[in-house]
Length: 208
Image 1 (cartoon, rainbow, N blue to C red):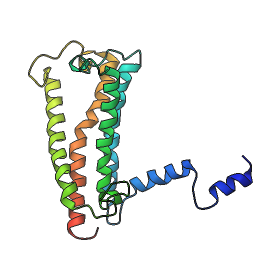
Image 2: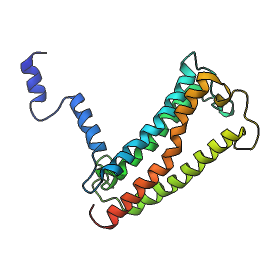
Image 3: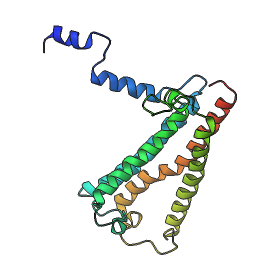
Image 4: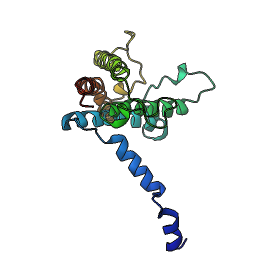
């Protein structure tokens, strides 16, 4: 493709795909007016504290040195759902849920994006964001605090001894990496709670 052809293709205000991707990424993360720096950092940190555990789960399925290092519960899955597919889905889904915290500081958390049918362009009712975020804060904080308390007590959430295949029982560097990847999840609920309170205060005062 000649330079002239490229100019004709992208010279009418239409950015190339890479440019659109960067612009979309920046817009999705850009804070609205009234968001303080600490609130912005807390919101952006939520997907980051979830990412290590997601990578760990995927690594235990595909990295030979870690294969079999985690009890993923694949034995409880239906026969038609491969364990590796489940792990990838769970990891991606976790990141998507974590990313919703960014909406509490960004424009798409206050005005429905254009890709949302029917509601596009309308204001997001504050409670529509605050209620699920508050529920998520309570559930995530309780879940991961309980999970780690049980872990250090050497039992499962059901009160039974941890199985031999549990990653925390592997010892050595595998257990160390496991705890490095999963310990940040203790921050998921509290960080979400802080961002939710800031969102509610900002929307209630009418600044945004």
